[in-house]
Length: 261
Length: 261
Image (cartoon, rainbow over all chains, first blue to last red; front, side, top):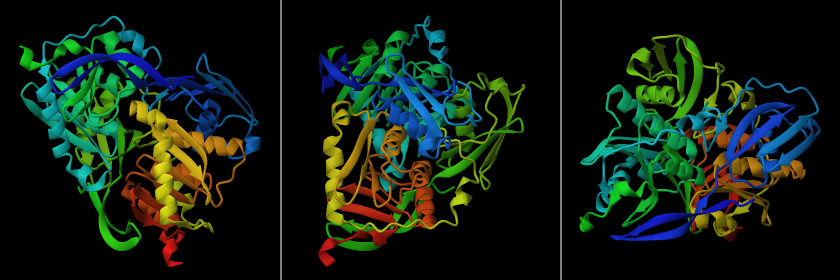
């Protein structure tokens, strides 16, 4: 199965924009059923699903020896891997869970459907140069990363500049810290945007959208699923903002080249 | 609380080695108690713990509005955040869980203690140049990453070369694919090593150790907790293997400069 999706995006280099096809990593949902119990849905790249399933069972302490499982059947089309153990499944968590890079997020598969009818709005417009500057500022402020190479950063900004900034060893936590701080300080996400250093998976996007974020920007890559959700919801999704370049994956009307105005 | 730990490591530049102090990112366990129920232990950077706790509750759909919680008490020394909700906690998972970057791994806090008495052994010795070459090979083989910027890679190697290689949108899955493939193909981890592109947290290390891995190498940073566990167990842990440089954090006797032999 294809690991890569080709998508039409808007590529910005300096102040030039070009509509072009680009490669985006696929994010695929693999549901793991063990002894007829659905134990997890892993967000993954769609290859070696049998290895992933068995590796997951090893890491989760569900199997130890080769004799511990009898059968493994991969249904690639429907994203299902069925494993039969030699013994009873002893596992506390039996509810449906979506994993990603990836903290376990307790959303079920219907979560997305609840969003389908919403088309999120925002009046904010950001220009290229401003985003290049924020990317540089995020970089400059990431002092723990510079010293250790071990963190991700996230910030909340409005049209005038950075309002909140946090680093964490986990890219999920970096975002949660920003969202939690905004919540406690009663800073609304209206007409603001979230800028992160790390890759954007569907889960990262959804947790920001859930609290009202409409513009989500990253120095790194998004997954195809994050892009598809963003397009569905009219979220602005921008990736690879580095130097004088960026890729606009969705909601390009909120990103303007000031020079043309 | 300090976000960074200073540790004595062996720094290799070309064929020179130097014992030096270096900054390593701290990995801190924050246990979140909601209405007297321990719902999660987050592996995180130890700052803004109240924001992280509230951001997590938002992301997990446990709170929606400011009125949904009454009190939040941070006990930084013991790594505990206590939240009182305005209403009953409706949350399925109430067991102790350790998160990291990070997939939910269902190990409890005693997991580590079970390892304490083991001092893992391996006869393999690797020389600098070989590791620099494997780092380059991992890079060259990561074709999905080159096209999308959206994956992590993992491989299993012995003294002669790379045996298994996988890419995934999740660094956890990349390792699980390698471990699952080795398990299914009955490839023992004796006298082999795991080389990954991504950062090494305690969880990544433990899942490799659990199936017998003794030498773990990364192109990126480890956390202090991963280093401490590695030192405890006599695991060889090497990070930042790039170009002709690397940092040996633990088990340096297994890494040799061939030129001296």
